[in-house]
Length: 320
Image (tube, rainbow, N blue to C red):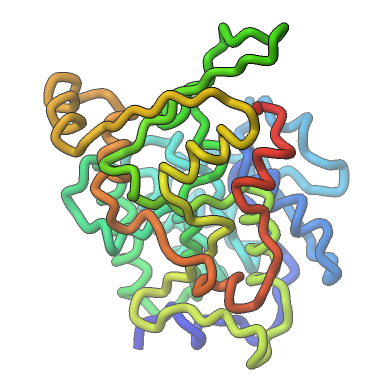
């Protein structure tokens, strides 16, 4: 049987946890683990020259290392820990996620959370507009082909903050808006169709749920409910259409200009600019496969766990 589902859960709560990376998600996971009642021993892996060391809380142990180290050397770094959670992102470039997964398996750790915090790569499939997604499928295949290391994939949808990144091209906040009169202008570009949906989860919610999944005692009422065939656990703070996104901005006083980027338009642009990473991501959401699922049927939705939907996030965001 595939080593990915309920059979993959540890028999006891693991205490020694290593988080790979201290970006937006890594720090959120570290914060949630620190706050957990089980008081786990949390460490973070940083490069020796990392500028993130100053943002790490005093009671978090810093392990200096490099994710690009040879598999054997990286495995030696991971081996002392029972749970390894990768929050490294795609910064390592092509091949990095497979490399880390191989090291985790070689180390023989108890439980591995790979960097799969995003869309449902199984549904999107191979050959999408984003080549890095093919590597994510290869990571899944590698994990599913073995039964020595327990693992859990947490699909989160888009990080809420990324929805407002200029590079993503969905929301453009006009920096020339007239602050004196209160006039604020924004452009919202729907990818594929205004009815297309996007699932979003803020980093803080992801961190909180990862801590729940990794550390809460196992019981019938708090089972992981990972899909036995895929090993994927879906979480979601909000799922909404691009039209609803525009409406929420208008509700907060923004004058919104609506634009539509069709699949055909995006494909034509990508053919002209094949190295444009933003266009590659936009095409994935425009095709509307594997990028959205119902909050009610998500892991947190079935448990009634409060989450920060987009409207609440907007109200508290310093960006808006």
